[in-house]
Image (cartoon, rainbow, N blue to C red):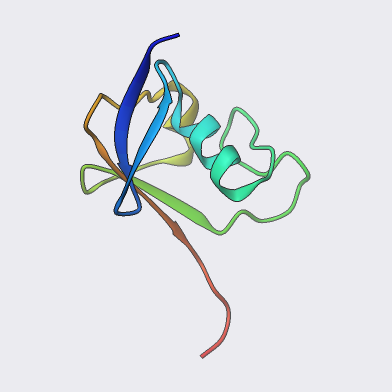
Length: 81
């Protein structure tokens, strides 16, 4: 199986070639993510994704496969002050 190397939140990560942002988000946060980018359990995800500093809309996560060497940032909302 072929892999590609990403920079995920500032750290090097190897993922299977063809991994979509939706799959990457699900694996990273440990929750199932629906094709439309929402939480499969109906809750809130509180996650935003940028690839090479460009925000990718949730609706595009399932169709977006980062290129080898891409910088992917997953930002999680945290409540509090």
